[in-house]
Amino acid sequence: MPSDERAIIHVDMDAFYASVEQLDHPELRGRPVIVGGLGPRGVVSTCSYEARRFGVHSAMPTAQARRLCPDAVYLWPRMARYEELSARVFEVFHEVTPLVEGVSLDEAFLDVTASQRLLGPVEAIGRRIKREIRKRTRLVASVGMGPNKLLAKLASELSKPDGFHRIAAEYAAAELAPLPVGRLWTVGKVTEQALHRLGIRTIGELAACDTARLAGALGRHAVFMQALARGEDDRDVQPEQAEQSIGAEHTYDTDLEDLALAESWLLRHCERIAARARGRGLAGRTVTVKLREPPFVTHTRQAPLRESSASASDIYDVARGLLNVWWQTRTNPRLRLLGVSLSGFAERRQPGLFDGSPARRASDQVQDRINARFGSGSLVRAGVLRTRGQD
Ligand SMILES: [Mg+2]
Image (cartoon, rainbow, N blue to C red; front, top):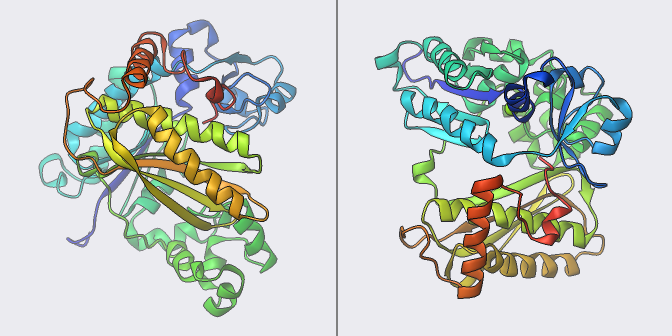
């Protein structure tokens, strides 16, 4: 292994929410379990492997899941419980490296390049992570390893469930080549279709395709996508300590074309980042909204808060204004991705001491307490209910 090669690990819990439900409710083991939004516009968050056999997958409308698998057990997410187990999983990560980038409650990238001197080769570290997670949570994690984030994530995905796989740099091109292009990071359904129209079905064909021809269909992303197709990816693992902003975003399988629905999602994202900021004793000054039109034209709009805040309402007021202005300037507004982030953290504060109006501060704090007690999502503003549990 070249000495300058990075060692990146991607850990992803298998069917996390559903597995937690099966862990806590033994009578559900071996049965199809579907966790998600159970309302009319609800979407599946996670389903157990038993449910996947019926063709159910995450991000599918719950109504469709009910048709495919009417006998499954349908449950609302219990976020507080998932967060509790997630904290134990992240403890394991921080025992092997300080360079941990959490992607979600059950997924993270770890840079263990330097840890190898102390803990042995990357596979030994990967085994240790799997073993410790199993021991402390009785849940199964898939572990992927590689010289960069792209390959580490692909390695865990390809070996799931109960995965353990390393893609070495020298074999990356060979491992990637036969995979369908849709497996490549950043390639969504629309890009996949565009590539299919060019006769490109595999990652290998994408890597080998004439760049000028590809640029004709994909524009300036062509060069970037071909680098990914060769297994090249120089993104760093961004540890939480270095976090300059707290954000939440979601990519939608079905584009958002309804402003009211987009606003519900925006509010939900604001609730999440406000809770995270408050949990860390942070108050931010700047709100950024990220808007992606299909397939990948991304706009960001930024505006300051009147004063530093970690209040969901304050953040939402600004974010909603930004979304509305953007929406009104489009002839045919559609969103593939919607995100919001809070940045400009001036200082660490004691949790509980936030700026923003006193009434809002009280309301947010009550909500945090209730959510901590009964599970996040127990008390959410009415607008959020429409999007509840959709990830
Ligand atoms: Mg997972």
